[in-house]
Length: 265
Image (cartoon, rainbow, N blue to C red; front, side, top):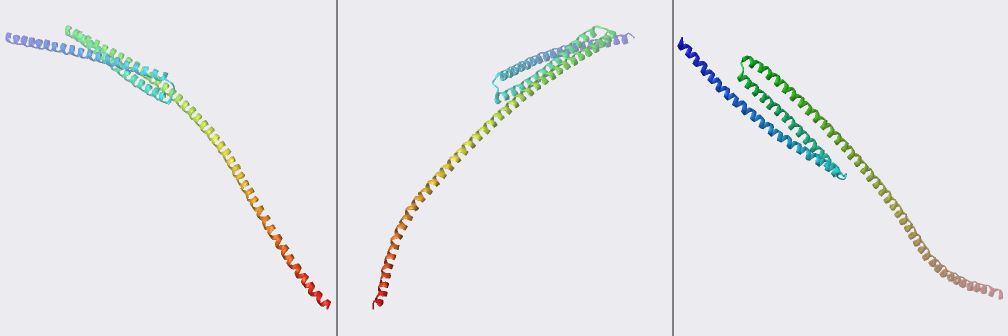
């Protein structure tokens, strides 16, 4: 009996010793887990800071682009800056959500470690109560994380709507500007075409008048050349008629003479 009792005591002591060792290892593991979670929070905090700085820089670039003189190139820069701001905003929101999640995880770990420490010092009843508290703490942390995520999502949605509205307004302004520029260019083109047509019409009239004058001058010259030729032909033809008449007259006289001679006989 005594041997059995001693053996039982030794077994319990060994189990208690093993339990203590396991509890120590568990505490170390929990501490390491808490440290790792804290490092994650610190790293995520740096990422949030970096994302916010990038967002700030993108907004500064956007403001600088908006201050520039409105040109197609500046409109493209504004559009690109808006896209950069939107991207930076998304990255910042994602980083903030990740930070909130990391903080919630750290809070849960800390709370769990606290509860575990209480568990190690309490009895089974206290352990059950601590389990209830842990469950309530987890539920509360989950609710907080959910609320934080909902707020972040609402904020991101509002930022996206605002950015979309700005982009839409910028697009409308750019379209209106392009339309006005096209209208002006068309008016200028039309005016240039009218001016060119008027110039062509005047040039055609001048060319026609010049051609008409040249033709008239040529006709006058031709007429002037024909007039002396007619005069020469008439001058030549007149003496010929006189010769024929002159030749015919002596013939008639000869015939008359011939006629008279018989009468004389």
